[in-house]
Image (cartoon, rainbow, N blue to C red; front, side, top):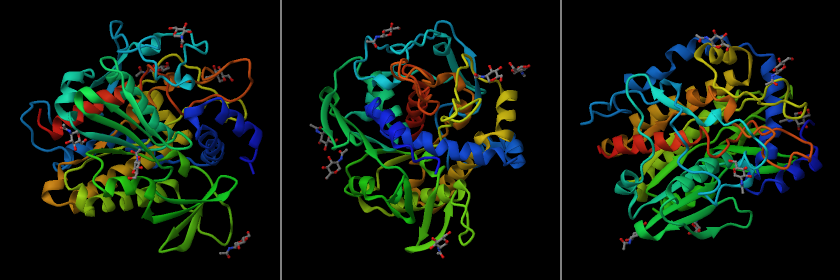
Length: 422
Ligand SMILES: *[C@@H]1O[C@H](CO)[C@@H](O)[C@H](O)[C@H]1NC(C)=O
Ligand SMILES: *[C@@H]1O[C@H](CO)[C@@H](O)[C@H](O)[C@H]1NC(C)=O
Ligand SMILES: *[C@@H]1O[C@H](CO)[C@@H](O)[C@H](O)[C@H]1NC(C)=O
Ligand SMILES: *[C@@H]1O[C@H](CO)[C@@H](O)[C@H](O)[C@H]1NC(C)=O
Ligand SMILES: *[C@@H]1O[C@H](CO)[C@@H](O)[C@H](O)[C@H]1NC(C)=O
Ligand SMILES: *[C@@H]1O[C@H](CO)[C@@H](O)[C@H](O)[C@H]1NC(C)=O
C-alpha cells in the first residue's frame, strides 16, 4: 500500500537514531491525512469551545489545594510573545539533544519560535525549576511510557535537569528505544519505556499490527507491576492512525483503515480509548503501584500542510496559530481526528479516577498538552531534522529542541506540585 516504500523508511530510521518510529509515524500520517480529507467532523468544531471545561467540572481530577491557583486550568490558555523568555538550554549546554531534534544544526535560522510563553487564562505557568523538581523527585523513578514522542519529552526533561549534573547512561535496549538515565546527586532515575500502543501489538508485517485492546504491553507493564516506577507519564496515539487489526478477548472485532467489507472499521478514538481504559485499569489494580502517580499525556498533534509527508507536505510556519486558526483546522484536517482522540483520553482519565480507590484518585491526572500544541505548527523540525542535501520527508510530528515541547515539562512540574500540594 502507501507505506511499503522500505528504502524511504530505512532512510528515515538511519538518519534519525532516536527517531526509529518516525518512518512509521509518518507513514500512518499519509493514510490519515487522506482519510480525514473526506471527513468533516463538525462535532469537533464545537468541542473546542467546551473541551477544557472537563477538568474544572470534575473536582476529583483537580483536587482542592492550598495553592490559590490550584483550580486554574493550566491547559486552557494562549501563547504570548515573550522576548526575554530565552530557552533554558541550547545545543551548546545540552549534549544529549538528539541530532534529529537539533533544528539549528540542520539549518533552521528563524528563532522566533523560541520566544513564546504558554499563558493559562487564569494564572501564570512558572518555568521549569530544578529545586522544586528535586523536592519531588529525590530518590524517585520517573518513566515516560510511550513512543518516540514520549522519548521527545524525556529528552527535553533530560536537557532541563542535566544543566546542573551530567546524567549517567545506565541502560538501553538493543534498539535504543527503552532507556534509563541516573542522576546520582539526587538518586533520581529517568526512564523511557518503549511502547507503540500501550496495549499488546503484534506485528503482522508491512507495519500492520494486531492490537489486543484488552491486554497491556508487557514491555512497560512488566516494570510498572514490579513497583519500579514512582511517576508514570503514559501516552500513545500516532501509531493508531494507520491500518491495524483490533482484537478483544483474542477475537478479531474490526480494524482501523483496512477498508475490508467483511470487517467493521472503527475510529482511532475508539481503539485508543479502549487502550487507555485497559492501561488505566491495569494500573489501578496493580498492587505494587499503589503509590505511583500516573499522568496521561494527551495526543501530540502533527502539522502537515500542503500535502502529506510523501507528497512534500511541510510545516514551515514561523508563528503559532491563533484560536481562530485552530478552530478552522479542527474542521478540515487530521487535527479534528486528533482532537477526538484527546477527548476520549480525557474521558478515560475521568473513568479511571472514578474507578480508583480514594487514595489513588488524586494521583491520576491529565497532562493535556493537545490544545497548546495544536497552536504550534512552528515547533516541528520540518525539513531541519537532518542533512538537507538528502532529499526526503519533513518531520512535522516530533518537536525541535529547544522549542515548545519544553512547555510539557513546565506543565509536568506544575501538575506534580498540585499532586504534592507544594
Ligand atoms: C548549535 O546551534 C547553532 C545555532 O544556534 C548552530 O549554528 C550550530 O551548528 C549548532 N551546533 C551543534 C553542534 O549542534
Ligand atoms: C535511591 O532511590 C531508590 C528508588 O529510586 C530507593 O529505593 C533507594 O532507597 C534510594 N537510596 C537512598 C540512599 O536513599
Ligand atoms: C525493566 O525491567 C527489566 C527487568 O526487570 C530491566 O532489565 C530493564 O532494565 C527495565 N527497563 C528499564 C528501562 O529500566
Ligand atoms: C475478509 O476479507 C479478506 C479479503 O478482503 C480476507 O483475506 C479475510 O480472510 C476475510 N476475513 C474474515 C474474518 O472473513
Ligand atoms: C501552502 O501552499 C500555499 C499556496 O499553494 C502557500 O501560500 C503556503 O505558503 C503554503 N504553506 C506552506 C506551509 O508551505
Ligand atoms: C488569526 O490569524 C489569522 C491569520 O493570521 C488572522 O487573519 C486573524 O485575524 C487572526 N484572528 C484573531 C482573532 O486574532
